[in-house]
Length: 186
Image 1: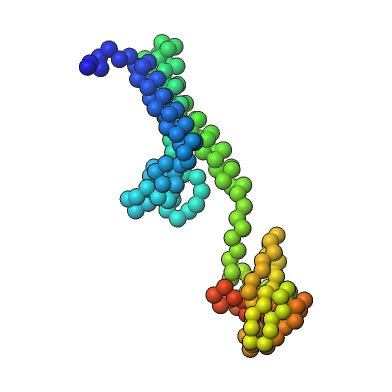
Image 2 (image 1 turned 45 degrees about the vertical axis):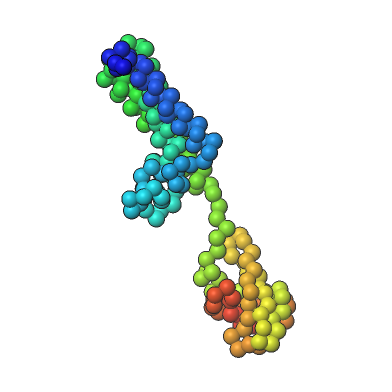
């Protein structure tokens, strides 16, 4: 089989087709190569380019596949318009970067709109809470505390093992495992 008969137009279309198929597969079956990044951390395919920083990577399978699709498509357009292979390659490169950057910008915007319901337990220390389930002598109850726009409920006990009735205002002094230690008064 000879590659001499294959035109530059066919090569660019094949590149665009490969990128498009890869894009469809990544949308249909989720991110490939572990969490969607082709460049890994510590020689594996996990994490993003920035190590422990979370967010969208420029090496996301979707961004790379859009780049490849646009590169092949714009290269084929360049050949069809009569440009030389070098010029068409440059046109494909520019088109790939522009469309890849657009998808990266859109994905970054969507990622930045995500909210997290994670509560750092250390943020509870020093806050005022209300006992919602009475704390019996040497036992545990439950408190509710406002943290930002969220209401957090935690298992609670007193440091000295004393009881606290429901609806008592308390101050969270420390955290021990999943339990907060509270003292009467706010």
